[in-house]
Image (cartoon, rainbow, N blue to C red; front, side, top):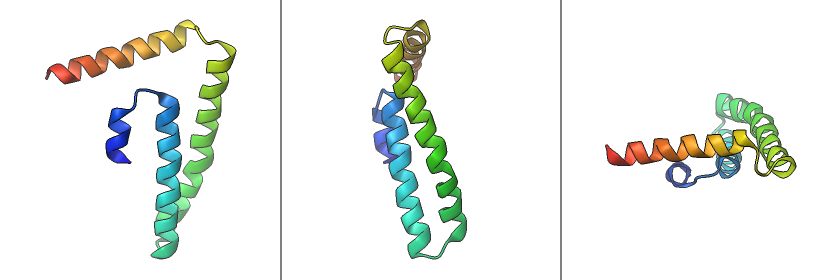
Length: 85
C-alpha cells in the first residue's frame, strides 16, 4: 500500500488507501495484541472517512471549482519537480 500511495494522483484514492491501511493495522493490532496500533488506527478511521466524504462532496458540488483545479495543478507541479531531481 505504501508504494501504491506514491503512484496515485487523486486525494480520494489516497484516502481509500489510508482506510485500507487502517484496517490492516487494526487487524495486526488485534492479532498480535498490540493495543496501541489497534487504538491509534481505530481513531484514524473516522478521520479518513470524514475527509474522503468531504472530498467526494466538494467534487460533486463544484466539479470545476478553482480550489480543486489549483490543488491539482500544485500537486502536478510538485511531481514534475521531484521527477527532475
